[in-house]
Image 1 (cartoon, protein in one colour):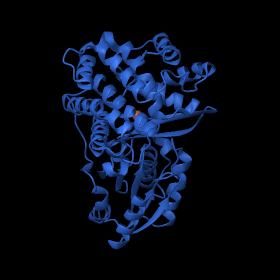
Image 2 (cartoon, helix red, strand yellow):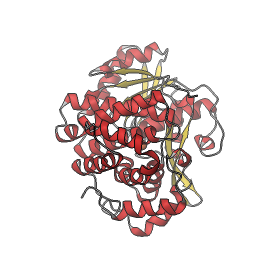
Image 3 (cartoon, rainbow, N blue to C red):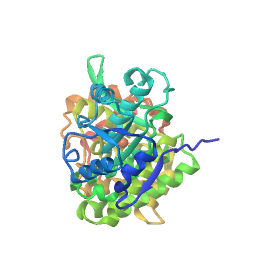
Length: 386
Ligand SMILES: [Fe+2]
């Protein structure tokens, strides 16, 4: 028995950002809170065009540009204050995973009438209707534009933590995935976010909660990444490669909402919160090490991943892990956590946090704590791409 629930309307293709105002009017919304980060996207020409489009369509907007990387619950509070003060009735998220997740938090908090923090790790489920959310991703990695999940950073027990929450009300109403919005991504961001998408597809495919419909999305996503990530990193203006990566990211997002994730994300959230390591980079480094440890339990599925990623029919699980490490190396991902700047002294705290990851039971291998520690130390010191 399985459920496949992906209620977000997906509009995909070059130039679909131009339809934003029409889509918002179609949702019956009149006053939109635009949520972005504070950087280049906030001042981009593409966003200015979207704002003009909204005005031409008779809608008005307010702009919250405070959704920084790894959004905190405080940022959600700030965004919600603006949403209420400005009398908004809908939300438009424009940017990478951070503004989209922050926008989900603002919407959930507006609808539920209580802090988003109440829904993280407490067992409390979302139940209230939320304002309509339209998401336009400017990176190809997070998939948040089509997922039912969001991740927030906050203090817990005197320590900074990153924790996710999920619920059907977090699915955006509409995802406008426009590869043209992603061509200005620099190679490093293209690589890190692309490897995040690969991690989503791989972890969802080998997850204990995998299902046959999500499997299609995973394998096609992995195939597209094998075909397009290096091209998109080397030739940012290659629209075909950008479209391939944009679709791969969205497909992986749809899959992870059905099948879940695994310990790559468990470690990456801990390394992000405690060591400031960017999410995509952390995943990219950890992916081959965690998958290597899963080979005895997931050799058939990993071999399928190897075939999809490399196009070689003879690929085995071992080849798949090697191909993930090689791909990371070729797009400039550091070979291990030490090379990415994580000090050895932090590994104990990263382990302590990661071992409590709520999706740990979805991992194909039932890691003991000792095994998790070994994987983490290998990922800190070894070099699989050699
Ligand atoms: Fe991720």
